[in-house]
Length: 94
Image 1 (cartoon, rainbow, N blue to C red):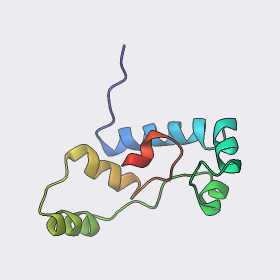
Image 2 (cartoon, helix red, strand yellow; image 1 turned 90 degrees about the vertical axis):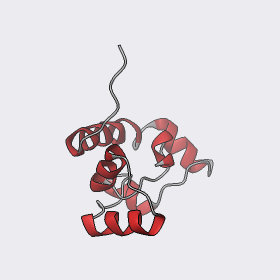
Image 3 (cartoon, rainbow, N blue to C red; image 1 turned 90 degrees about the horizontal axis):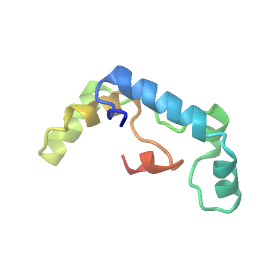
């Protein structure tokens, strides 16, 4: 059975927390950092969280206005949990 994609703020928070816990301190990430294949700041690595601070509503609305689009609810909720994500896997594409 496929796990549904996160949509709500609570689902994104749970997903990113779990993903982060399983990957940020993994041997694969440590090896990638040592081989310079991984892009994650020392600050975030030491903090144990690959995500940025959450985006505020004003920043989300301003970005939508600047781009002339309305973000899908799932992406807007991702931004409400983390305004970006450093490269520890596929999540860096957001």
